Length: 157
Image (cartoon, rainbow, N blue to C red; front, side, top):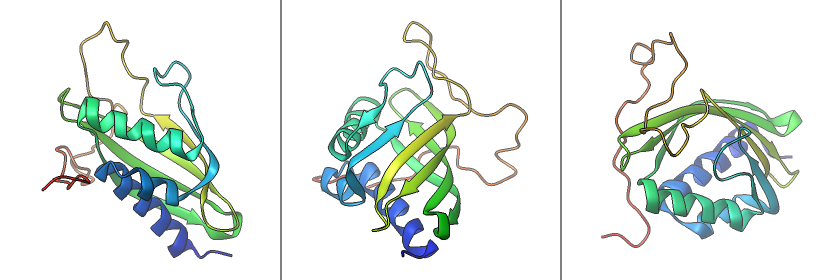
């Protein structure tokens, strides 16, 4: 049975793979039939399969310059579950999105399911880009990031 530290490390490695646009790193963290669900109406729909999940995040990096941070983590190793709070920076749009994800792991400690909950749904394509947060939360006071950190992408010098 994986420990809480091991499950958290899997999530952090998965996020490193997302930020690096490294398909192999992401898929190594997941079961082959993993699923990633999003709020109803999200433009990409669900990602079904580890490869589909990884390819979806590579497309986000290419199209949006996406960079993700993990802002909070809670892990229940006995239940093989975790929840994180994250920020998804979209530098090419000049916006960011905040949300939570619920993780379900296999007994091997790999990600089986991710359920994403946004602070609010993304705007329709016809609307101007905007950042998303929960209203009234003092993100600055709580130390949340407001600019994307520097990341190194796979294949970049």
